[in-house]
Image (cartoon, rainbow, N blue to C red; front, side, top):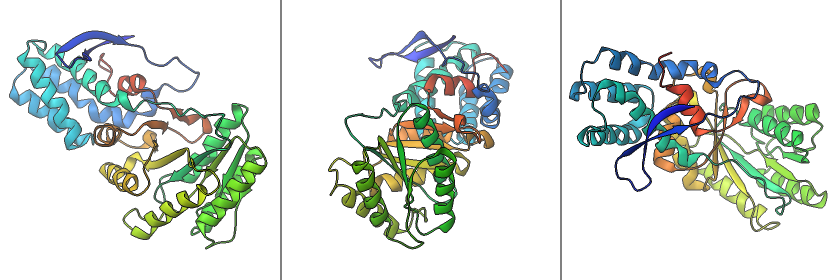
Length: 330
């Protein structure tokens, strides 16, 4: 366990508390997988180590470090404002109190977005609509999700709705063959909504537990893509008025603040219920999760920290914050 200062629920001041990281699962420690992002925040250790007192110069250096780590302006401003509040209240007296206070604010910022995706067995099939631009790892994430749910004993069907990219259809078929999962697909250029409609009809008639539907991943700035996603929702609701039950955006952490821009624009077109952040093991920009949490408050369902299916991990706020900024110096 590790101690931090955590904001009281009443919003009045800070209080001492403890958080317990998630139990070990035999996987590589998250600290290792997030090494590059951890290093970008690691500058805080040297800043505080050099400081003889907590003054405005130190606060400004902390602010620069947070911005450099891709937390974004809004999240950084929130943290800095609360640090100044803690100093004014006398809760942060010396440099040794700064790091736990920063860690506490990081946790308070992102903890509301920790919400595991629960599959409702009463909604059958439970439809997960996957959205995101090309190159973020959307199709691979679908394959990993399929593997996860199969391991939980659920039946799964995939819909190859990214009909504008032939490689996406073939990739999804390969995942289906690998895991013995049926894939509903049509020819290149077919209507995405029609493919997903057929898949939902088939999944419903066969009693499938979960349908995961891929969609086209052209640039999020293209209005016709957003219109197409809205059409997909309308067509599905002819079969199930509540579908999709989850609209999950996939973003690549390595794109930094562009991931936030994608989340913002997709959420305007098709209200998102969850986000998966991929490729966190290969970037120093893991701080973008805090930017997304601060602006959109959309649940972060999974984080991708490697190539295997097991490396698509449910998001745990305490474990994530501790991996990025442990109290003890690395």
